[in-house]
Image (cartoon, rainbow, N blue to C red; front, side, top):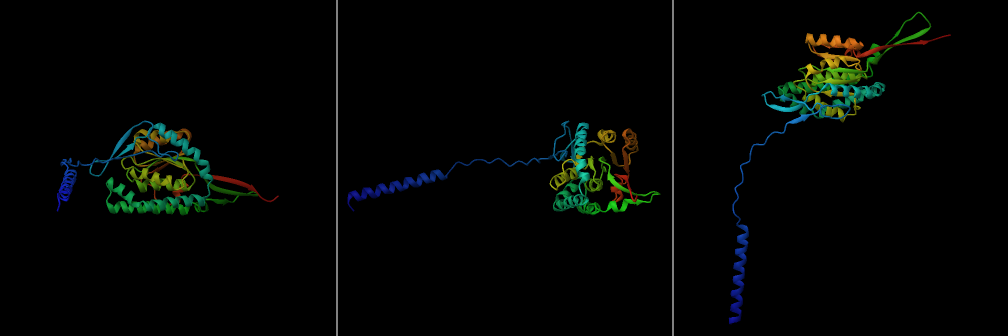
Length: 318
């Protein structure tokens, strides 16, 4: 090998060695200590109100904590004010005429749609019931009963008139008809313990009969009622037909009974002082008071309780 080729070979070998060192330098990085991963803080959901088909925060900016079965906080809940209630009544009154004029068939279809959507989210509602102390079996049974309750009243929307209406005999040349008409806007104080089934047992017969309503969910277990608002929102229920508040019953019970644009009040519970207060305040505009000490049991009479009887005379003959 001549000297020129020997120098070229030596130079190439040096270049390869330098290249390997550079690659090795790039790969070998200084070790960085990674911090120990800390326990993640749970993000508790803040449940809002449901008024006029929207999810506003309470105007009072107040909240209270919902505790789980183990005593830990599981959610923040809006503490509705009297102003929130007045806004809900305005929304219910605005929606009442069109809802009462809707056909019985349409109301039944919408109630059935609510049941369908609740069926699809059964696991979520069962989990919320378990979070507030119910066992898995009890939660599953309650969700199933709530779905069945909706289907039951969906079937009654076009039948209760046949049961409770009548043609009355009169001693003149007239037909005399008595039919039921919805009372209008109903305020509902839901059962304090039963969150989902108790809520649906109150709401379903009222909207089946063409009423609109403002409901105060269970104070201690309102999760399912507010989650149901998400179902109502996407199941063809017109805005304002169902309005849902959460908060302290002691703060709102008088307003639910005394508001002059409310036609009836439904009370679930057995507190004698609250019942007395409701009956006294309701007398101001002669609103109907419906007291349910043991909750609402499914049946057509739950529909007729919030109806008024309208009698029509129609002449016949000459």
